[in-house]
Image (cartoon, one colour):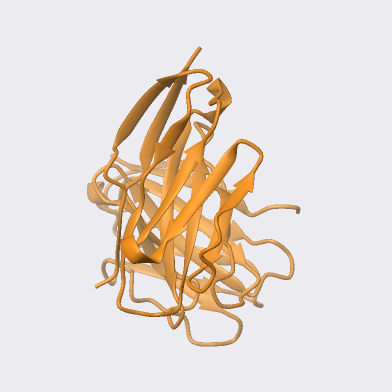
Length: 114
Length: 115
C-alpha cells in the first residue's frame, strides 16, 4: 500500500491476555519502528529494526514486550500477560533507513486493557 | 542526556492569527536531525520538516516557517494566518546521528484555532 498500515485499529483485551499488533510498512523501507503514545508518557520509542541488523530493543519497557520482523517487511509487536498500564496507542513507522531519514507513521492501534 | 522540550502545552488562537510553537533541544552531539510532526485528531503523525544540525537556514513552506538557531538550541515553528485545519498536536523531535532513526519527541503542543 501507499502508507504504513496497522491492524487492528482498536483492541480491547482482558488483563492477563496476550495481544499481537501488526504493522505493514511502506514498500521498500528498510527501517521499521514501534512507538507508544500514552497520556502520561507522551511518545516513547520501543524498538527499531534496520535491514538485517539486530534490532534495537532498548525502549521495550519489560520482557513482556517483544517484536519481530519477518522477511524484512511486516512486523508484529507482542505483549504478553497484558496489564492495565499497557493501555496506549501503539504507533508503527517506517523510513528509507538512511541516517536521520524522516519516518512515516501509521494510524496506530489503540489498545485498551480492562 | 538528550531531550526535547516543548514548553507550551496548549495554545489557542483565532483564525488568521500568527502563532509560534517553541522547541528547545538538548544534546552534546554535533551531528543530529530535528523534525516537526503534526498529529491531527485522526491520530496519524504527519511529517512536516527535517533539518540537519549543519544547516541553519530557515525554511518557509507556504504558511509554515521554521527558525533553527543552534546558539539557543531552538527549532521554532511559525504558522502564519492560521486556519481551523491547523488545529492539531504538534511534536518536535530529535534524532542523533549514531542512534539510527530513533526519534526523541517533545511532549507536544496542542494548537486550537478557532473560527
